[in-house]
Length: 111
Length: 142
Image 1 (cartoon, rainbow over the protein chains, first blue to last red):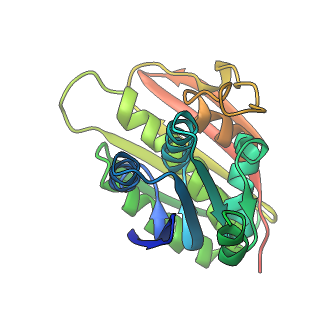
Image 2: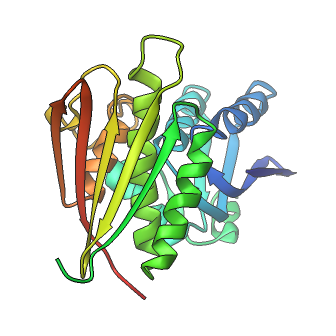
């Protein structure tokens, strides 16, 4: 899996490519939590090029969501393929995680 | 049964075998002309099952083999997963309540919850020291 991290203004965007499973979730968790430790409070995760997610990936996003909530930060997810989105729906994560159609929508909502 | 295809493969109990699992299921999915969605869902269900087996199934450090057999009928697949780990019946596991806020969202049990929602039916038996899990799933072809 590739993780591209980009900081624009007060928003850190993580673009994920490939597969987020139990083999790759630890690397992603470290990148996310390093950013949160460094003071990042606004996070966008761009799923445009993510082909696959398992419960290991959901766990990382849940942990980050809880951590950011404690710090009064926010997390937004965008550009999911429909079968990736379905995994969030089955898990019930769509009830508390904002999932928006495009990266622009995500960036705009922080303005 | 007519037109029944069977595919079998084996995995060692290491996490690197997740890639082998993905490749095998991709190969079978293509041979059966399954839709991207069906391949994705089968891969996810099998990933959760395999990850559970290698994470909690073994109390020793020895190498073990997980056997997978996929058979296809007109519009559904039957997948049998066999492992020699400690007895574990996922069917009995209570499905966690689907959360409606981040505080009530628990991390445990999520994998099995996904599996139960991705397949039509899941059966378990313990036989000759082995866990035998049978999944059936209606699939789409292209």
